Structures are given as C-alpha cells and as structure tokens.
Image 1 (cartoon, rainbow, N blue to C red):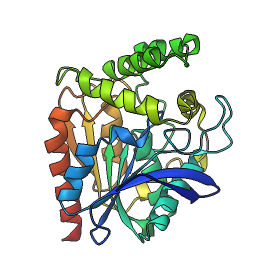
Image 2 (cartoon, one colour):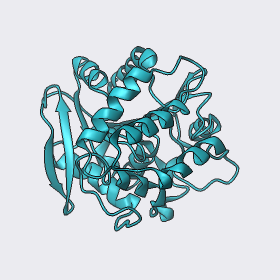
Image 3 (spheres, helix red, strand yellow):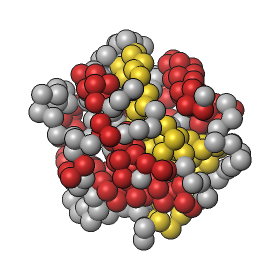
Image 4 (cartoon, helix red, strand yellow):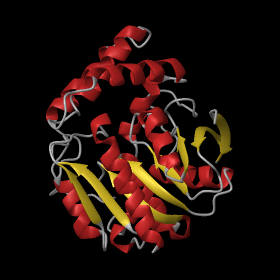
Length: 283
C-alpha cells in the first residue's frame, strides 16, 4: 500500500501498510534518527506473507512526518508513544504485536506500561530497558566521535549527506557479516529523497520525558522476545541481558557478532523468530 499522511495528536505521521487488515497487526517502530524505510520493503513484505498486517511509520522528525527546526524539540518520548497508539487508531486496530528497534523498543515498552490493553506481544531488537541504569555500558566512543562531525556537514550537499549516513551505518555493523554497503547506500539515497528535513533527525538526541516510568518495565505482562547482537556498539549486549532479567518471562535470541542492525543475512532468522513468538502467544 502507498504511504499516507495521518493526522495524529496534532501532527503529520507518515505510515505504510503491508498485507491484509484482516490479519493480526504487527506495528514496527524504528529507532532514533532513522525513518521507517530502515524496516526495508522486503522485510515488511516477508512478514506480511506470514499472515501479518504490517504497519511501519516515520517517527516525528524523520521521513515525511512532522519535522521541527534542529535543536527545537516541542515533544517528549511520551508523545512518541502516543503517536504509536495513534497509528493503530488510524488503522482501526484495537491491539497489536509490537516490534521496536533500539529507541523503538523503548517506545514499545512505554506503551506496554501505560496502555497494556493495546499490546499483544513485543519484540525488542537491539534495544534496552526503559530506565536509567548507570551500570550498563554506554554507546561506543567512536560512534559519538563520528556523529560529532555532523555539525560541519553541508546538509545541502546530498552526496555528502548520503556518504555520511552510510558511514554511520557502517560503524554499527558488527563482525557477524560484511557490511552491506549497496543496501545502506540505496536506503540512504531513499532517505535523502523523501525526508522533509534530514537535519531534524538529530533532534532525537535531545529527547526527554517518561522518567516517571523508570523501573516499571518489570510490570510488562505481554510476552517479550529480545533479539540482540553481541557486537552492538550502541547498546552493548549487557542491555539485552538486563532486559531479560527485568521483564518477566522474556526470551532472548542472541545473534553472535551482530551489530546494531538487522543485517540482510539475518533477515530469515529474525522473521522466523518473530513469527514463532507471535504464534506461541496465541497458544
């Protein structure tokens, strides 16, 4: 189905669906500073072929959704969680299976804590507990160093911006598989061509809110599957272990050597795991 702009919570949210609305819904929530296209088309079509109604959407400040001036952030993570629920409402979905990548997984936890009736299952991919836990390892310094160069980038130079995005994804790759540069290049080109304001994506680094929910992920009752690579440089593997300890009954699929991504070579394993997780929840 073609992309459409939804009016949700007073803002534009761009969404796209795959599969039949009569099938169980799977809502895909992407992580910080990345639009919905990083749940790539083939991944979404494959999930739909497994009998799921797949919805992906652009978070605020990404893609074709409402964007704000860089450095101006008139919303919180709680608003982003409300957007996720609003996307379901716009499609007439009462409750759904959620899959969240990185920040998207934390948004899914917030919805499960605050609106548990809307969440059937959760798959947390390269994510962490919604909490402030100082003992967990931080993001790798080389990633921070790389993105500190963004301030000197000419954002009107499309080729330079695409190269910058591809370089950013390369350092997330891990050691499990060679970096898939052609895929990253194609997605970065698409990102550059469809975004309202590419520079607005960095606003997610300023995101706040939801602090009153810290410590409450242990209250999540929905079945949870965690998928995490051992070479994740953004949210190191200890974050997956903490999720497993925190959320009752959570199951962990470890991708040895994988980074902060769903590599094309891991697509079959990830889709099969999500399919089994959803199927098991119906038993």
